[in-house]
Amino acid sequence: MVGQAAVDQLLEVLDLEQRDEMTFRGMSPPVGPQRVFGGQVAGQALVAAGRTVVADRFVHSLHGYFVRPGDPSEPIEYRVENVRDGRSFSVRRSAAYQHGKPIFFMSASFQRAEDGLDHHAPAPLNLPGPDEVPTMTERLTPYPERLGVWSLTPRPIDVRYVGEPGWVRPGDRPAEPHQRVWMRIDGKLPDDPLLHACALTYASDLTLLDSVLSVHGEVWGPGGVIGASLDHALWFHRPLRADQWFLYDCWSPSASGSRGLATGRIFAEDGRHIATAVQEGLLRRVGE
Image (tube, rainbow, N blue to C red; front, side):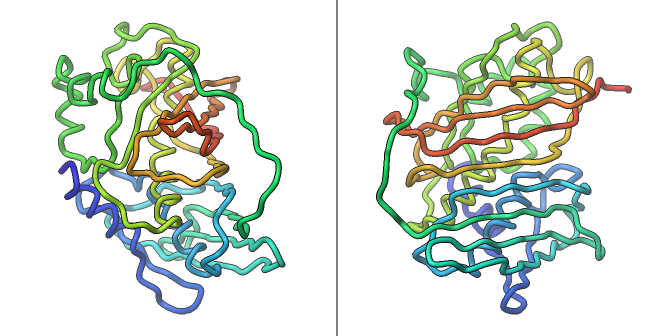
């Protein structure tokens, strides 16, 4: 499933059922990985938190921890705690539960619009645009064993690597200090700022850890590495649309003790720095 059909399914996933004032219920896609995708549970947790905040306050940061793998065949309950509503900021704690145990929890802060100092570092220069790099399907066509798994999963996000992705065969990926990926929601989203922030949260977990492998020319799967997100932080700097192209410029400052740290800057196609992500993941050799 691709294009607007996949986007509509993502919108259904993000459209939580409200059980009471501070409790919500979410589902996973009917076809997907063996465990709940981390970006999904983070996006749903942000939806839950955002629905308890007045509409004129926009999320500016979130910090989450993945504590247990989620079961995609079971609904997820989201419990929101109102930590504080101040004159300028609202803070929420949003926790995801399955079988009575937490699988993820997040703190998120929302701010009313204000004027102030404004600057940002420039976007990377001299990179090919999204229409000048291969689609993910084109990248994986030489690897039918990878394409089969990819084709079974709904793809609401168009992902286009500037360099080689971590899904090629061992030995086929050169070591690169940066991993750069063009992304956009592969369809149209409603004009809801919270929904665009939640979609960006979902997308920000797709490729970030791959930048740790990129430093070493490593790949995912047989002959390479398996991994899982441990935590995730995201800062929103400027208004954004997740259904327009954005560049995810990622790199890894450190890896040790079977953990890798990755950070990424997200730029709109016009060069505006719209968000920053940081994540640590568990990375182990296949078979360890």
